[in-house]
Image (cartoon, rainbow, N blue to C red; front, side):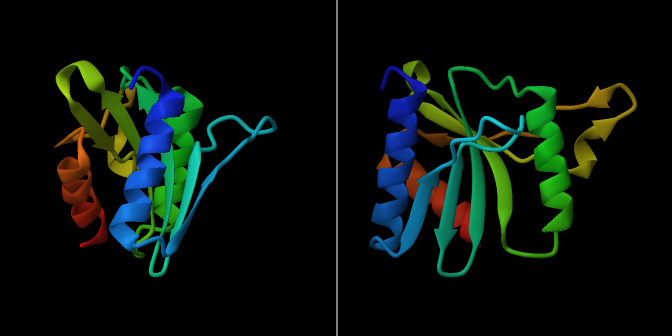
Length: 132
């Protein structure tokens, strides 16, 4: 895995495997609004919006603002708006979820990351984590 596009393909494949293909995974191409996540995942019982990053956890202010707004609207539901970052050199990927608790006195603070191994077992752990 050498690029974000390959990470996105991996994410898609892993979601299909975890749900036996009973979902829709769609890359969101958006040139009109900054901050909208990269991937829409529609499962039978929930919807995920995923911002994908490659070898950097840096999220632009408009991306974190979108996630905060989105997660506040859906906070009492099973739906989520998250960031997934791949770190192939260390064989891990990291999930971050920006919400109102990330707003501090100095601005938007990075939420506590949750780390998984960058392999099918790690993705299964991630999937179980977000669907519990």
